[in-house]
Amino acid sequence: MEKYFDAKYIWESFPLLIPYIKVTFLVAGLSVLFGTLLGFILAAMKLGNSKIAQKIANGYTTALRCTPSIVLLFLVYYGIPKIAENFGLNFSDVDKIVFIVITFSLQFAAAMSEVIRSAYQSIDRGQFEAAVSVGLSNTQAYRRIIFPQAFVVALPNFGNSLLELIKEGSLAYTIGLIDVMGKASLIIDGRFNAHAFESYLALSIIYWVISIAIEQFFLKLEKGFSKGKQVIKPT
Image 1 (cartoon, rainbow, N blue to C red):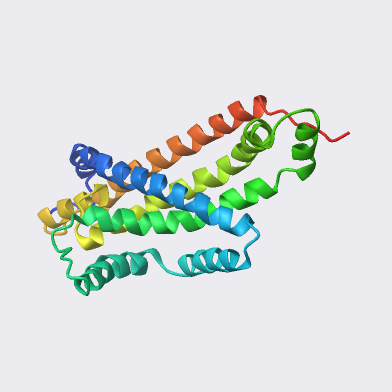
Image 2: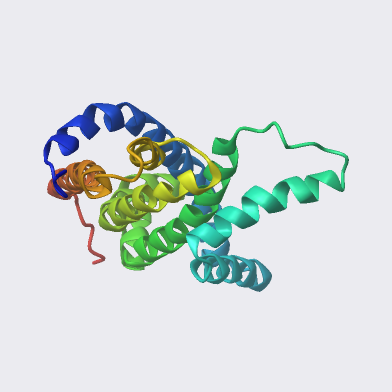
């Protein structure tokens, strides 16, 4: 009689899953890049003087935060091609990873806009005034005083957002992308759903290792930048 649990299937799953981690990292890396750029724009809109821009940016953040990741993924995957058809464009041959990156870039941007806004506002305005009073230009004051401190403040939340992105990225397999999660599903199907627990346990261990490594990296990064942080107090 076949055993319900057999640890050998865990070890057999690792060499099959690990090569597909690069796909997971590719999706996360591109989403972080584009999401951070859009997040900066949204944060600038929130911090600006235009009431209309503030309402648009805040409305965007609220809408994206209230939309489940899988719903947003389906809206992008099925919605963009439908909209493109109205302009005579055919997106049927576009790689699935494009829609996935768009989805998680939009979602990551909403999170990053708040991270950047709160980090910037956490820095005492008096430090900027003190920097200017000692002869620094506005650009120098931001570059040498404000931004380095805001960067340190933003690091923990940035790291948390990155971890959430990597975990949410596992939903990409629902539209057919074969990343580490998608490969796990294929392995289970290949075993006719036998020993699914062992396969998912191997997948969980991979996610645990990645998450712990990222968490420790950001902790060390935060400590390293905090050591060199200088604060100019207004006189």
